[in-house]
Length: 589
Image (cartoon, rainbow, N blue to C red; front, side, top):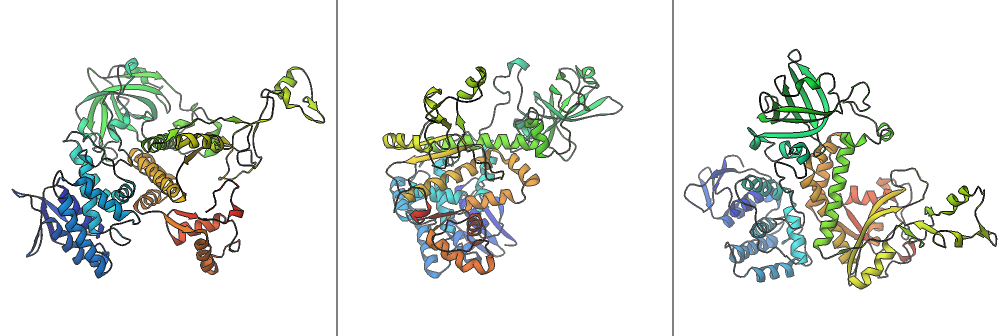
């Protein structure tokens, strides 16, 4: 939309509605601050359009190819109705009938993804911005299921995140935090204090993430004196040894902070020949703008009041981690140091975030966390591939015996610690089901073990598994829970571990972030087993599956991936399988 200007208040919810709608239509509006008026106004040449809904409709009609105004005349009429309804019921700062309006939305959205049709429209943009704004004010914090799901889908839309997130971050520095969460489905990262807690031993330190990984990349801290502690990634001297440049990392972020240490700083002489990769040190100095283009700020350690303290020096030739990348196999050989590598550091931070998100998700939805036994006598899944736990081997070795005690030609487990065979659990499901039948909604989250001797990326001897159990629910509730949980975890990682994901994007998997954004943008696909088989049979001539597709088969990885990656191009849930290929404990429909 060349030459189109929007004259409105930058922080107004009406402005957000218009910008979200324009973004969804694939165009850009140039926003100009309003002068003495609160009525938004769009200008394009001699054309002037005033008032929010009129501008929304104009965007929808002008760019009808984007279908933000609906894909048919009937849908456009429905969009109009919802725009007018939203203005009437949600147009004031504190709607007197907000609860009743939400009830209307809930009833309408019970079997729908969006308000109208199958796409995000200007009606979704308008109403979702209103509800999002109310939640920021502490209103409408507890939404019913369908409305919450719809709002989560809308707020995850790329048009919404591009507009509302950017405006929220700029306003956040000026305004106090709202009493209600802006998105209850995934709380945003809280700003950390300048001086980290529990750091009095070193006189108080600031996490490097707090300095360089924030929205302003540390510019608001320019001029402040801080202390950082960490491990050296690289170090080099300059100006004939009068300056030292150090890249320091403390594990709070994959990003390093550059430290410029002048020879006038206290402790400078102690660094000579000892500050190699891996050295541990504390630097106290002033945050200054960086003249280089790689970072916004750096820490200058110079003159009185600044110092460097070397906790532990290293010799570069003896330290096994170098600046270059290392293979996974090599990192496994130095397990005590591999957490300092960029890859393992990012994995650890993302894994910690996902574990935190798991507990927050289930706790916020009324689930109880149950600790199920790791040592069990039950073969939960009946496969028999379990690690056995016994004390008899150790006792036999102590007594110098070459065999285990037997009775009737079999091992006598009555002599064992538990008096019967015991194993590391393959699943907490069997135990947690008992709690479900007493406490309704429960989940277990802990390590499980499989003794399947298969050396592939899909088989692990030890891994952590999330197993929720819901009473008084059916398969559709189960699918809703699974989808909500996965989206919550992805959104949590996107908001709390963006730099880690960007590292994965750059070094491990190109297109990762876009794929995660797509996962959040749309509802998961859901097809019955019969529908899935019919789709795969139609696609078989061009898909060239290794295993022929027929009804009654247990679909393999190639079939599942084809459905998700080629047909639906998003996460896909297949339900209503034939009972003969599912576990005995599956509920019949």
